[in-house]
Length: 383
Image: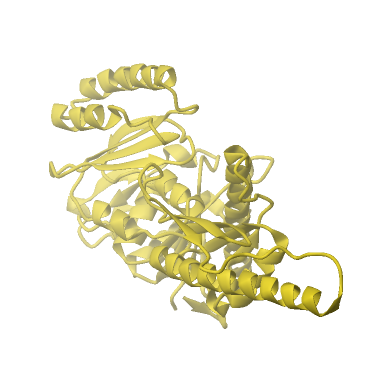
């Protein structure tokens, strides 16, 4: 969306979630945490789910929906920090998504699904590529931004040129060997650049994390297409056989977090600018829901967690089509068909149903949200 010359690119792929809000309710939403992801922790998580299951059964949640969560939990902790299960009310297939960060656990049945944690997770676990290089080639790994246990692609690139080590000394022979070594390294990094660019395009990588031999990295950057090079973030990990996987994960995770935080800050800055001009932005539930009903919202800003002030428990009204949402029944075209739903979840469902993007806003270090995110909601408008 363009806002006075500034483009807000989507932070996450939300198309799969749009399908979820098009189904009739009520919808069962369950989040389960597996951190650390061990068999013992998984057993504890299952016990916590069993307690929630009994409470939901007492609320007459259908057994078929509860059984769908049971099935999803079997072995789900492997390769994941948490699990999200959304079971639609029309009896369709459950949406199951493994998470890279442990969610706040909940299980409830409501008119709309609770998708904020899923959106937040997709913002952080964005498609990316990691390249660890030396002068002979590279190890490449890519993540599509989907299931953390299944979305990894790996490949190794071995340069066709034999790498010649530079030697000391002087004279004509020394210069010849030096040049041959340079040519060999340069050619090998050209091959790596081709493979890396193709992999980055394949997964639509937002971040390309590159580490390894300093000279090889320099050749690689020179050989990369400009569109890939501008996405490169340097990391301290190397291709050494004794390199620490934990260290690599930490380095890449820090770059992904920084990428996400930078773009969230940019969205907040643009929102503040538009509010200051009294132009294409809203804050608070009333104005934001009004804009959602009119399909004017381009990007919904929503608090990632409990925004305080009773917002977490506040209910609003949603119509048969989830883009129709209001604080009072009289604002809906079909009030007789409306049902109550949690405010923030209803706003997210309305945004997805109307084709808008959604950006979840995390709290600051003190646990507070921006003042402009009154009621946990704000929006950038199409017009």
